[in-house]
Image 1 (cartoon, helix red, strand yellow):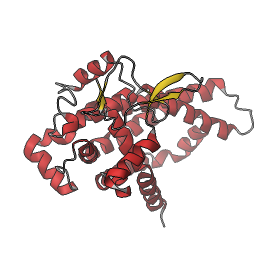
Image 2 (cartoon, helix red, strand yellow):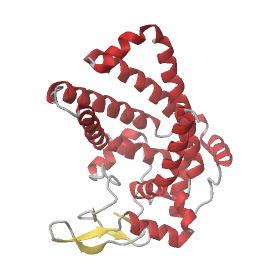
Image 3 (tube, rainbow, N blue to C red):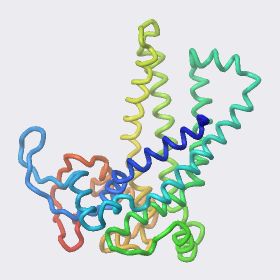
Amino acid sequence: MSAETGSLLLGSALTVVSHPLMFVKVLVQVGHEPLPPTLGRNIFGRQVYQLPGLFAYAKHIIKIDGKMGLFTGLTPRMCSGLIGTIVHSSVIQKYQEADQSLEGEKDQKERSPSLQQVIDETSREMVARSAATIITHPFHVITLRCMVQFIGRETKYSGVFDSILTIYREEGILGFFAGLIPRLLGDIISLWLCNMLTHLINAYALDNSVSHMKEMKSYSQAVTGFFASMVTYPFVLVSNLMAVNSCGLAGGLPPYAPAYASWLDCWKHLSKESNLSRGNSLFFRKAPAGKTYSVQHKRFY
């Protein structure tokens, strides 16, 4: 088995395992709250109204659609992951083939990376990721819409090919790229922020003479990656909301959700409502203050 094949299999397995979490996260992002808040205690022991967490939400989905309901939208997501991995690898391979004549110099730089090398490698990774994101975004849109159908119990997006025809017939080519701009921006900002912070920490904060330096650098990469994902989360949220907004599903139409003119309009509205972090955490979810829970629409107003 080749390394590329092994990577594809591992990626596919992780996609399947993590899919229920993504499903719950998307429903929370669009504001669907099927279970009313309950009185509980926070980590400081104070009584607060809390919203159901990941497991309670998942049990609710199972109660309605069974265990297989947790894997709604898995097929287009698998297509997206597979194609994205192939495109990303192809772009990186092209860069590597162009650098074969400088292999010795490259190996030396990898042992002691300079700022210029970090910029060059990040630029190449940005191109590879952006190409993969653009090409696979139509499958991402279909995945999200299949999931959001849970809210209104629709069956409009029932398969990959049928969904492609539906989107093209109703929205044209642009419908396949709904929410693409904030997703691209979030990916690019996250990548540069993570790589530059990691370089600064490894170059100036860590002592190269310290033992286990390789482990220390991997920890710094993980920490900066987590920080970058937190900073750019609003882009992910806005992108997902725009992918389902005004697409004919109850979860993306008034009165359940506002009709946004653009992703900037969506950002401004979420910022005004202090909802730019909605769905970022699926545990210890505090009910929004000053909001009224609607039993009819299963969301807060």
